[in-house]
Structures are given as C-alpha cells and as structure tokens.
Length: 504
Ligand SMILES: Cc1cc2nc3c(=O)[nH]c(=O)nc-3n(C[C@H](O)[C@H](O)[C@H](O)COP(=O)(O)OP(=O)(O)OC[C@H]3O[C@@H](n4cnc5c(N)ncnc54)[C@H](O)[C@@H]3O)c2cc1C
Image (tube, rainbow, N blue to C red; front, top):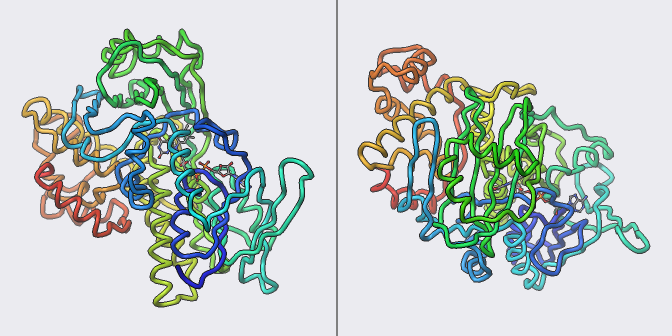
C-alpha cells in the first residue's frame, strides 16, 4: 500500500466492484457509494435494471476478474453456476451451424445470473478491511478546489431516513455509476463542459425469458446470429445457476422489437437460425414466467480524454464512459480492462509521478474502448436505421461488414467440410477482446479468405477493397480501417502463443 489516502468509487455495479478491489492495492481507504441497499441474497437490484437479463463475461474480462478475485469462478460454481469446462459453444448463422468444444471452453467462465456474479464479487471485497460501503446513499455532486483544478471529494444525500446531505473528502473520485451517470451535469455545475460524444442510434430491443430445466440438457451456449437483410433476429441461449436457462431475443433498428408476450415470443423462436436446436431444447424446459423486455435507444461513447481542463483527482469508467449494445457482451470486459489500466497507471505513478496522470489514464482507457465500440457498431449498423453520430468518423464500417461476411462464410465452410474450427476461433478471440483486430484484419488473412470462388460475399468485398494487386492489400487495409491501440499485455501475449496450435 502507498501513501495515497482516500479513494471514492461511485456505484457498486460490476465496474465499481472491480475498481474498488484494484484501488485497495493503492489507497489506505476506499469508499464505495451506492444508492441501493444490497439484497441479503443474490438477487436483482433496482439500481441495475439490466440485471434481470443474462450477463456473460468475455474471456478477457474473466482473466482480469481472476486476477483481482482469485478463485471467483470456483466460488460461483460452488453456488450453482455452470462451469465452462465441458461447455459446447453452438453458433448458427446464414452459413450453417458450428459446434465448438475444445477451443472456446479453454477459458474459465462460469455461466450464472448477473445477481450471483455481483454477489460473489461484492462479498469478496466486503471482507477487505479498508474498503467501506455506504449504501442507500446517492452521490449528488463533486467537491472542487478553489482554482477548479482538483476534485476534492463528493456531495452525498441519504435516500432513507433523514435524507441527510453530507460531504466526503477524497484524494481520488472514480465514477462507475453506469448509464445513468450524472457526471456531465456535475462537471457542468463546476464550470466544465464536455466534448460532444459519439452516439450510436441503435434502437435495440431485448426480450428475455427464463425456463426451468425439467430433465437434463447438454451444457451448451447457443448463439444464433442475426441477419438484418432477412429480418432475422439474434438469440442467445445460456444456462444460469439453479437449473435455469435464459433465452434472449434481440434486434436493433427499432422497426420492430422482440415480443414480450409469451405466445408471440415462442413463435418468434421459430424464425431464428438456431430454431430447430432451440425448439428441441424447449421440450426439456418449462417457462418460469413471461418474457421481459429491455430497450436502449442509444449507445454513447464519451471523449473525456479530450478535455484539457479535466480536473485532477477524477476518473470515470464502465458504462459511464462508454456504453455498448449488450448483445455483444462487452460491457463487463471493457470495464475490467479499464480498471486494470487505472491500476497499471497507479503503479507507474508511484515511480514516476505524472502531473497529467488523469488525462493519460483517460486516453489509455479510450484505446481500450476503441475495438469493442467499433466491432459492436460495425455489427449493429447492418440493421436499417442504426446510425453513428457525433463529430468522430467511424472508419471502414462497410468494408469490415463485407470482410466479416466472407470470413464467417469461410470459417463455417472449413468447420463443416474439414472439421477445422480455427477460423471460427480467431473470430471468437477477437470478439472476446483477446486477439488484436490487426491479427484478423490483415493482408495474410485477406489473401486466405479471397479464393476467387465468384461468391456474392467475395465480389462485394473486392468491390469495397478497390485494389486487385495482393501487394497493395495491406496498404489499402491501413487506409480503410482504424488503427487500434488497445494494449495486449504479457499475459494476453502468452495466452495467444499458447493458443497458436489451435489458431494455425
Ligand atoms: C440488457 C443488458 C444485458 C447486458 N448483458 C451483458 C453481458 O452479457 N455481458 C457484459 O459484459 N455486459 C452486459 N451488459 C452491460 C453491463 O451491464 C455493464 O456494462 C456492466 O455492468 C458495467 O456497468 P457499470 O458498473 O458501469 O454500471 P452498472 O452495472 O449499471 O452499475 C452502476 C451502479 O451505480 C449505482 N449508481 C448510479 N448512480 C449513482 C449515484 N448517483 N450515487 C450512487 N450510486 C449510483 C447504481 O445503483 C448501480 O449499482 C448488459 C447490459 C444490458 C443493458
């Protein structure tokens, strides 16, 4: 522990919990302020309305969680979560169905409800003596130094009882209060205006229904891709604890939404790519209650790192910094990478104090956000009506969509004809934020997937590419696509090396 004294985390969602754990290595006292009261058993809370819907942690997020909460997966499994050890990942899309066991299940990811995950992480840090929780307390503003250069603490208000208003001084305040964060308003109150954010007008709809498993079913995570051209929705079928399984239907674009009416929901299942599989599974399932919906009109990516007057002593992460379309399952993983980034910067700060510390951290976190934001936007913008807005350009969307189409087609063909899943696994690892996008979008891979078969996918990709000479491919890719700078630390590099046999 260092000489840094008090840190405050706003919000005890997943981002807040990981952050508090990370800060405990650097601060003498860590306070987590949460507007909710915590439940006495793993159950959903009002402050996180999304917690009804199944949450899956991507492999990179799971690695970071394992670092900060060693053994948390085993603990989840002890409490009824389903181990990924013998899980089969089933992917259905317009090119067929693929079943993957060996590669994708090499990651430790226990399948459970969000409430159970939060419960286990929270219990772990409630046992750390210098982390304190203030619950039923809402943060209402930021305390600032006279010269406006430093955040010196927070203003709070009790939600119950006398509704007392208080001040909590701190050396570092980290906002992890999620999509409903009031940070922009609080900054405005102290005279700071924020740059225009990027906005993905996504108009997405989720509908989730839970079922009790009557008799045993295979341990499968079923992902049924969407196909906006044919108006086919996406779906995810995943196990949670207590012999319960959740089925999500999803589409973006806002023209229609997945139904929240039981009968219509069951009918819509029949129009998924994986319909046969899911309808068959349904024979072993009994609905627990009707489906419940969740709608999001916009995903928002803030650009706080551009503020030259960003105050010292303040950071932000998780959904408050950038929120994503949840169907891609990136939110927890990006929050984990951000918390880890703050930790690395605090470590470096001990040795070489940087007066621009906070802006440097924000910039590094922004690099962590970039691939997830871009990949999910590329996928969502296939839906009619989904638009990217703001003064930032989203590069290479059309090209990437065509590239992914052809890659997916070849991956499914290889799996089907040669029982070789390595292309699928590459795509899986990129979406899991483990494989850098540059290892997926490059001239070698492009040469591999272009095989002059005259397919529609290949013709469309060649048209977007605009050059025929393979020697010019890399240069063209560099022009079209963003240059991603997310850091892949030694652990990830070693992991990728160990996965090379599966990848080659
Ligand atoms: C339907 C849906 C499904 C999702 N599924 C997945 C998934 O499968 N995988 C995945 O990785 N991500 C998923 N996500 C995203 C995921 O929920 C978030 O990215 C993740 O929880 C990190 O969010 P957070 O901690 O920043 O915010 P939250 O989890 O929303 O937590 C914010 C916390 O701050 C508290 N708070 C807010 N304001 C104040 C205040 N003023 N004072 C005190 N406390 C305050 C809230 O009560 C809450 O506890 C999903 C999201 C949705 C909407």
